[in-house]
Length: 293
Image (tube, rainbow, N blue to C red; front, side):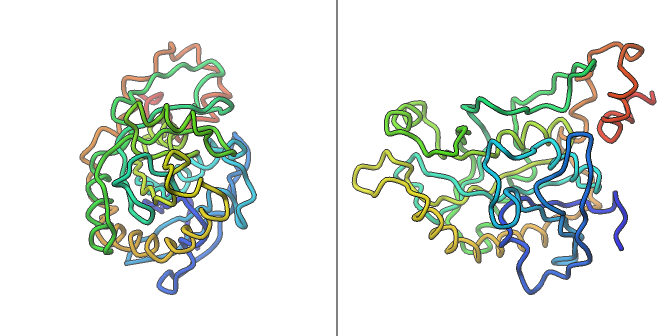
């Protein structure tokens, strides 16, 4: 059995991502966190010679709304497992004509339109301000683009992901306003994950799988759940191939030459003697090394 703390690479997305013949499943790990339960047990195994932890973002059978996800528990669970590099795979709508359904975008920026989410580990007597100027790990962007190309996908490097609340899709007015801002894709989950991954000092990158043109494209049918799910089914094999290509390229033992591993180094602003003991205990996997100094 794998011990907590020894899995360096994580993947979060649909359950289809870990239903591949090449994955050797070692166990399913159900974790408890100070923030409650993650979306589902983590599926831990070996793929392309790498130990990896998979988590179905919305739970098996897609049971959880984007606003119902326990984002903190999901990311904290990856941290407990030892994950240092996290790949997100998710469905998005395209806001540009040239970005077509089944294309992949690896965004490097976000625009937040959420309203109902807790998106920080901090509070309860401890204040921290991490930098999100570059919310995606620049090193993982390179790996994601190279992997998507190797898998035969049409891939676009960089771009802005607007994170809407959901679960409803956009109104046409909203879609047109987002387009006027120059964004590239629209989705419901990734920015919240990126914020928390940065606070947890986990490298994070998004493989945004385009399923539709939202509702702005007048010559295309307005986005519907049925249409999106059909393209998602078509994208499952491609997403599996891209994940395998990424894992083949990532060396979990290599030094992470990016700012992510030290995101909290200058972010903790509360006087150490004033941090409540329970907060120290709850956040020990994130802040323990800084409090020991």
